[in-house]
Length: 146
Image (cartoon, rainbow, N blue to C red; front, top):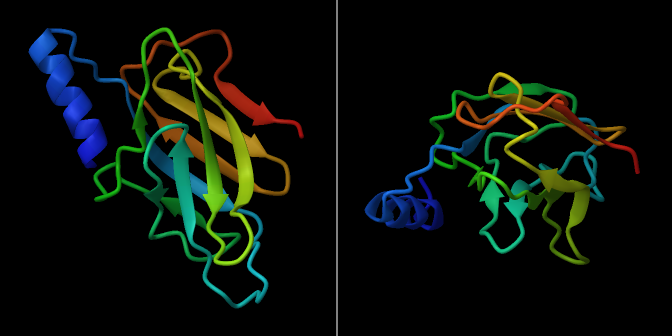
């Protein structure tokens, strides 16, 4: 577990409000490689505002469905508060100009139905996220339209 998430969990455990709303990546399929040279291996990462980048080191090619166990060294991706959403996104790191954005969206614990949430961005990616202790709402799929 990354240092930032660990320290939050430790602090909440000491305060008696320990939360298990940890989000992990279950599957991801990147539809496009934004690198200038198509043969280049993209550097893909997930990041929520104010948090460290989480590099998805296993994701190296477009149009391959990657499946994860939730125990990879870079998991969990983030921890969600109970009643508040986080602005999160999937990005491709670029050396020159700013990083490419696959999509950025509001990730909320209420998006998870039966502990699962799928996010789809047309022409960019489809990702399935797991959060077993997140609260479900009537909508379980978050889809970007832009």
